[in-house]
Length: 295
Image 1 (cartoon, rainbow, N blue to C red):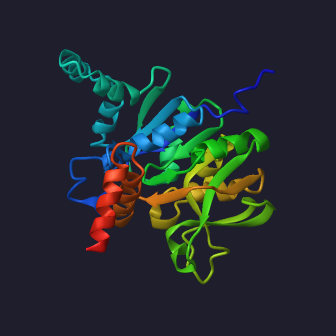
Image 2: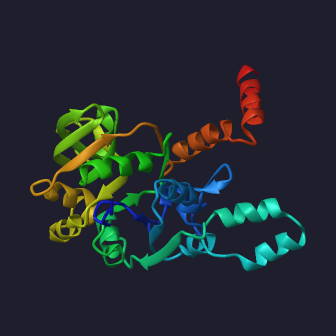
Image 3: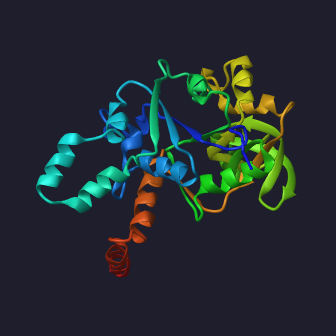
């Protein structure tokens, strides 16, 4: 049976134009998305998650000083030649795995930092009328199957926009987009309201949007129609909220764990947990942690 592009997700947008000021001085000359968890930069974890979900076109919305991201996914002829000359085929395989042959990387500039909604609009022409995923590399998401794979599977059933959500403490609602809705089945909610960073006293729930989305192209028109939101920025949440009146939007309580690597604490926590299960380092690192804990 032929499946149209309107029913499958083949493109993902990665908004990577942010300045990463919370990590200064580390991010003065290095994109925050290139900060490393064990042995891979954050952006590579997000791209690998999208690739594992069957997505093959990766669209990066970049800004100034983000060239390192393009270089990371580009071919490194000099490096590969040197490794080949030294017979380091295992390292060549690691370098080549960063960008598989069937994966396409496309880059578009966000000339002004006007918010996540504006970043998504910058990629509209490249989406070409198809549903698309959005992955925020700041959020390192770990799941089995991968979180985006879980969401793509749901999209093939429901054919509507889907937002990943998680429960947060009530006092933290002012840090997230918060959803309200009716439970359809366990872990799947039909969204009836959506508020960006509400004060805990008026938050409709404690279900917060995590950094994974699947969206239909209708969202572009709704984003464009919104006035500037919180912080004077074009908010993606406001566009999705407006879309609720004409399209179904689902919230999915994903199965897995999220690390807020946009914070220093979250990045440290991710490094420890990922290192503990690393195929090469895991046992030795875990033994060291245990020994240190017992000292």
